[in-house]
Length: 346
Ligand code: AHG
Ligand code: MN
Ligand code: MN
Ligand code: MN
Image (cartoon, rainbow, N blue to C red; front, side, top):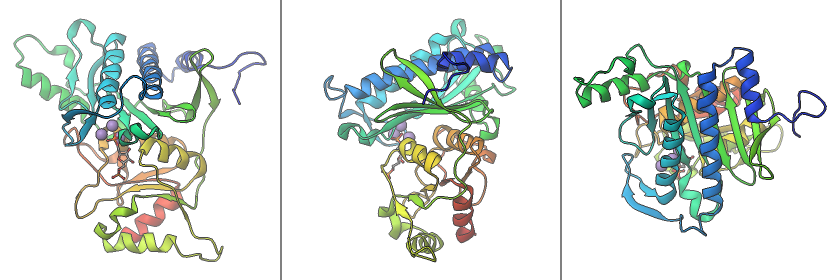
């Protein structure tokens, strides 16, 4: 139910951001960036909900840097996200799943923050109207701030600086969040003071605070893996997966839940407990998910909720990307569940 700080006041994302600013958790530039991201998410929610009507289902006809057939909404949501961030005048560099390289916001409009994002996660689900989402993370610029770029800088030296600015470990994240486009439109955000959940009220188009300081259950008997890849997994992982199917003392094995959207599978894991995994396999040596704008932001959120994000051996937030679209295996969720898979993989 909506939270209010007094009997009559409903806390919206806007008022919550201003509260965080007053406590010093964020500065007013971050407030503007986060507000611009929430606007992008509202626009994408509207586009997703009407996709079949406005001919926005299906493929764009292009292949992105990931080698994926881009959906029309991959492209459109990337434009919506980029435009909202650029027009905020508070971002310096943006890196997207759908852009080959990071983009420096042009001088007159640039601010400091570095924003990484997956504009539409789970986009293979769009045509069937199954939950999708957007994921984002926000960093301070690295020492190599773009501010000292001058005209005699060659393009690739600016590009190089952008890559340096973007390739930071998730432990440097100042803020991370996602928006899930599902039966409700849910905006989940952390600025390092816990995990807050907002629900879009379609009556007046505002995100309303509905859960605060979410804590993920320490354990949970729900697992989300694409078992279609079982034959390609390491033997140790097969033993782990087999162990989940044994009834054990409780007489009940784990339940499988997998919808093919990281945002949807993660949000259920955050609230109900359990584990989401996208392991490496013989086909994809580093798994499928991208460190920068999927694994790191989700790991920051889960740790803020008392959970764990691992590549099977180390903390996701300790990994420094060496290239923008680098993939890593991901095991994320309840501490006891991630500990368990790490033991099998040791
Ligand atoms: P994206 O749509 O942003 O490319 O991400 C898709 C990811 C993730 O959302 C999901 O959990 C996973 O791909 C599903 O992959 P499989 O279809 O291989 O299971
Ligand atoms: Mn994709
Ligand atoms: Mn994704
Ligand atoms: Mn995507």
